[in-house]
Image 1 (cartoon, rainbow, N blue to C red):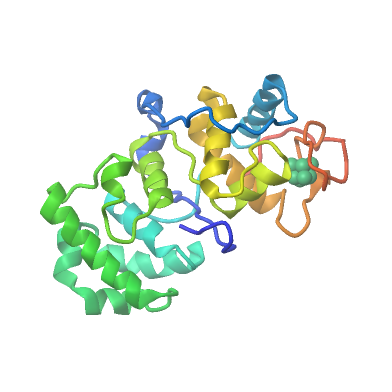
Image 2 (image 1 turned 30 degrees about the vertical axis):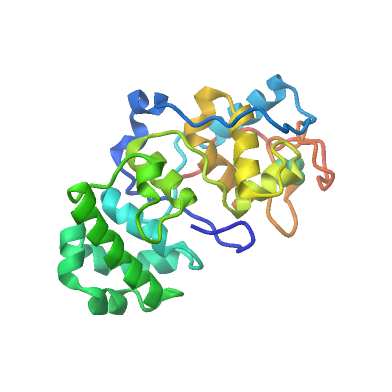
Length: 263
Ligand code: SF4
């Protein structure tokens, strides 16, 4: 999972688990942040709801591209994706997961062989160590199952809070908001969820995103940032929220036609 200053992003798998579509699980409690130090934002509640409504029409079921076949392989894939492209991670993990899709099998494979499988990925030596260490911890402390809470997930080697959020959302249907470089940029550029740190931006987004849009908000924001509100130069003429956006960088007030985009 990338950090905002490192221009990578997490893309989720088209093979994402069915849990992504389980409405019952989407109601699981989200850690909403305390009310302290809330910056004023130049959007009304109605405008915020309209932004996410339009995103939901553009991408009714947003998906990412980091391949996995179960919660364990998702944890591994997300942990491997730091400082790496999703395509590069997928290329390596396809072969790795074909032989080791459980913590037990990963331990049996051993660190040297894991390293061979992922040697095309940046920081592969350290990541191979972490994959083995987190597999061992899963077996020793969690009965070989991926835990469902953030507090437990972050005890796994190589798993930080953002990775935990992605895993909770993708594997278990918990609506969380992992802040990557795109989410961070959009929060600040649009002045909709400003913050100096990813945690501040996360807290700001969690305060304003309507509950019913929260589950997909992470992907909508990432995809909007990746394909439209790009880092170097936002493509405002292609933007469906150009009339609402309050960014000082925007170049038009005319929104693009609101149509569903190809998956
Ligand atoms: S109008 Fe431009 S700056 Fe605003 S969200 Fe759209 S692409 Fe980004």
